[in-house]
Image (tube, rainbow, N blue to C red; front, side, top):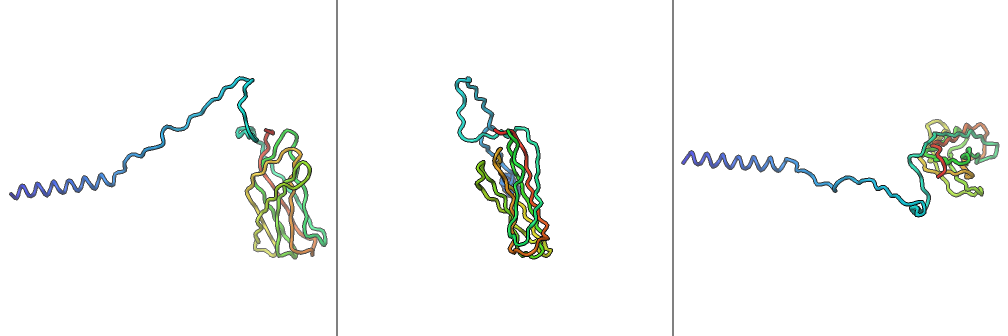
Length: 184
């Protein structure tokens, strides 16, 4: 009787151990099937694949570029700016980052803006770089990641403003960077 009781306790202990191990052992996951496969579309020249909207080729050769503006304030002037270089014919600028700095003698606030203009010179987009006080008296910096496509004939204008018209000894600058690609 005692031998049967020990066997029963041993069997129950073994069952509990198997249940615990099976509950903490990870089971295989079920995915969403095989990975996506590429599809090759082949049409005759007389039946091209219709494309709607702009097409950008991600694998086209990229040439890095950066451009800077050094600016000053005239006495009585609250805002100053200038155009960055324009893309050459057949090329497109893709602006991915902009930054600005301003060391001002009397101002307590500064703002940095990048304006995109169309071929007619009208402003079509404004990008604000949030200014941050650098810790020095009237020193400001600002930077932002951007995604601006600039075609030949379009312009990029850098603009810095301050909250006063006093002083001309400001040290100001804006820069943009990105890459140059062939026009799609």
